Image 1 (cartoon, rainbow, N blue to C red):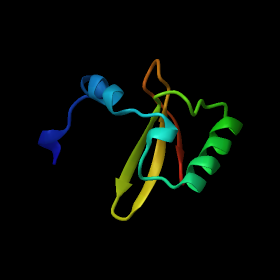
Image 2 (image 1 turned 90 degrees about the horizontal axis):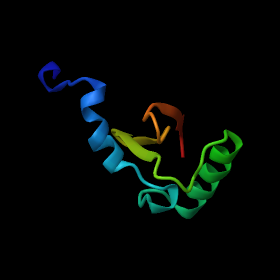
Image 3 (image 1 turned 60 degrees about the vertical axis):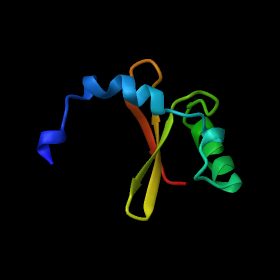
Image 4 (image 1 turned 180 degrees about the vertical axis):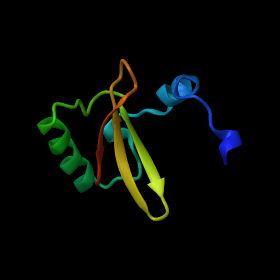
Length: 79
């Protein structure tokens, strides 16, 4: 609903609090984490930083990787 929309910049402090290290995300299996770690490494993304967030849509989900400094989306990966 549009009344809940806010400028991106207003949500950045809350977003930063929600970011997690890949290994700390509970919704992923060990095999998924290993696969994602490999793919992140290939793209030059750090898996040991608090830069990841699971995004859900119905029964599907993706892992969004953010730049820790700017909080811009660097990658969206399917587990």
